[in-house]
Length: 318
Image: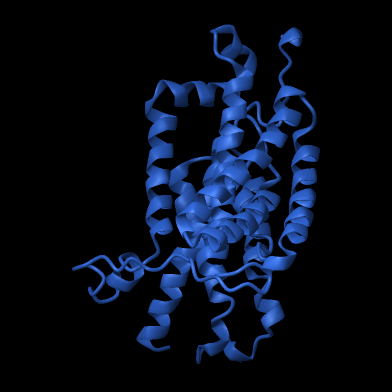
């Protein structure tokens, strides 16, 4: 493997990690409030198509990015209304949003499939740092969304662990009735968390269509929303561990389209002879392995999951 190939792999790892981290961070915020959102895949699809179409129309990628976040928030509002306000099943609501979001995104994006994206994000190339060997291209020559995602991760950690709002959000995820009894609105806290999660998912979709793929096509999300959901479990509902998990999953996602270019052998097998279809399942195989490992771990120690996760709250039943 050449130095350029390794650097290219690590650069792509950071970018794929940003994609799943941004969506996973929004899911983490929602789940810490006690709401499971399985609609991330559909929200990412809606964000990807709307962000791309708005960016093409305005010739401004940041406007498209913001529009995608707002669309993701609007779709999340449906989930909040159904699962939080009405108290319906969170799993059913989330799955319906994923199915509906993917279908509706494909429908409204039919005319955008062949459009060329001129208004896309470009690498920043931070002066004085981007030329540093190895670290420069990997850390300091990335698109702005990478640094935004890192900043949002730090902000999420601070809010969750160092503010009264974060304390209330974590409390409602552990015991909604107790939180309600001290004067906090369960509906407001949970709905707000779901809306923020939807905005993050929509923004992640826009990062895909406005930089990584630089276009829109049906099936663009390709299961990465589900990886983001699994990433929250892998990260034990903590932003820092979520970031570490995102790098691991990002590496597998970046490796898949590149591994056939590497002149390597593994246990006597030439890596570049492995079928691309088999390589494509690597991220999802890792997801299954991680979930199995976590299920075994849960038998020997208490689960770090919020105690009230997926449990609807009806005040009259308190």
